[in-house]
Length: 124
Image 1: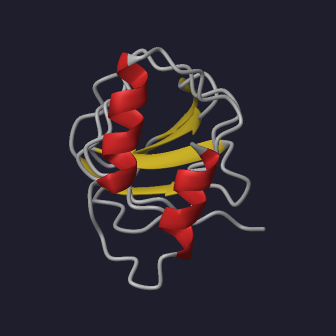
Image 2 (image 1 turned 180 degrees about the vertical axis):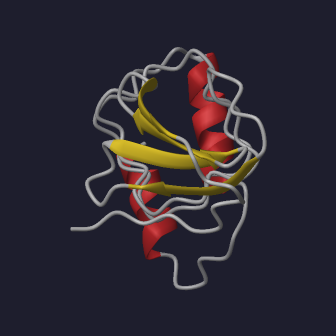
């Protein structure tokens, strides 16, 4: 699987698509342990991540559009991963949530915004 992910990353015509998401979904059906896999910088569209153990899985700079998570997140306007891929920040209904990616645990809620938060970023 690592070789396949590397080939996707090295593809000179890396266009948005479903390849990485399809790989994830297929291997999930076979109960593959994803610990330590690197999906960073890939388009991971429509991945079914519900109930999946994502311990030490790197999704830094990945596009997770239309992916399903364990917890219903509502309408996400903005989301970003920390540079090390360990944290995910999301904006839902004018609130910012910080998640630990390894166990899909919400660790911080920042409220008080009166409008949509259109962009999120981590500082190095």
